[in-house]
Amino acid sequence: MDQRHHAMRFDTEIRVMRVDRNTGNETGIVHGIVQGGSIERNQDTTVTEQATLDLEGSSLFGSDLLRIWADITYADQTSESIPLGTYLWSADKRQTNGPTTTIPLTLYGRLRELADDQYATPISIPAGSDPVAEAEKIITGNGLTVLPHPNSDYRTGTTLTYGLTDDQTDNKLAIANDLLTIAGWTTCRTDPYGHVILQPYTNPSRRKPSWTFTEGPTCRWTKQTTDERETFDTANQIITIYTSQEKEIIGTAKDTDPNSPTSIPNRGRVISKKYRYDDIPENQTDQQLQQMADQKAAELLATNQHAIHRVTGTHIIAPITIGDTITLDLPTQHINGTYAIRTQTITLKPGLPTQTELREAS
Image 1 (cartoon, one colour):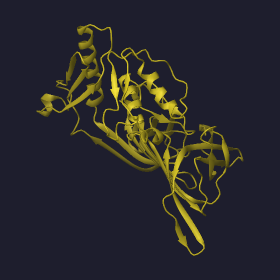
Image 2: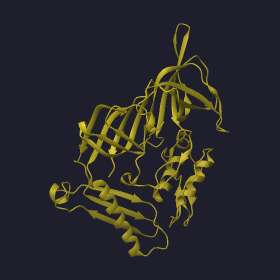
Image 3: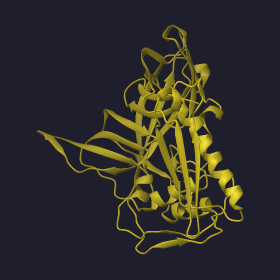
Image 4: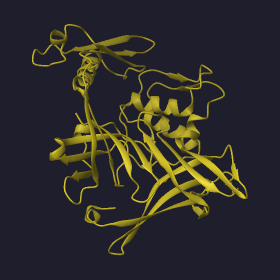
């Protein structure tokens, strides 16, 4: 979908395909899908994607995956097919109404495969390892495909050990995400084909917007919008703690700016947030490590200083997803700026209306 189709009316058909998990190839269409259902994406959850569909009949799909497509035909008779996601499926019940049987399907993004798996014995990542490469080994070891990505120059300064507890949070996805966080990368997410995306973290304010909603007859953003700002919990002190077996480095940053409405003097109290990192880079002096910890605290303070500016609204389908940045230019609603997508709920009906929650990129 591109910007030239903004002004065109279009028809939407939802198509669901079976996908062989070993080859990744689509093997056939799923018949009997009832119109309706939804897709939920949330960057604050570990698996990030979930969907629901209703299926008439009793066909199930073995170890295959399911891929949802939106087939779109525009008013000028051009068409395109947009993949919306590739999922594991669950069918725990069936509903009958005389001769008709309906099976509600619950679908989960492929990261669920990593979240469900744990190591039988503890694993250790040696000092001097590339944590991104180690995370990729975990992911591909479970049969998932990782898209090409840049190299990481981060090397661990100490041995990292995982799997020491029976806690369900000590799963392969949690371990991979921890390794990525140590390297300063974004946690795992998947593309519509179920491939895993690994990428260095970039502040949303420095990302190029992937879509623009401009007020007017071609705008896909609807008029009902909620615009809210939260300042009560805005941090004015950040503490960063880097630990290894040999040492602990503590960095701090405080907002004492008299012109900042959420600073310590203007609030009259301290609101702290603490961040822990279980690795210290190798070959660094104590002075360099202290500078690193203080710099990280200052960077996080700059991020936290801004009040949470949340915009929630509904738009017709657009090629955007969680983690993307977009531009809103809605002068009659007094909304203009660049925002990062936090959540999306796509309703699987004509037009694919999508409720999206945005956070101001700052």
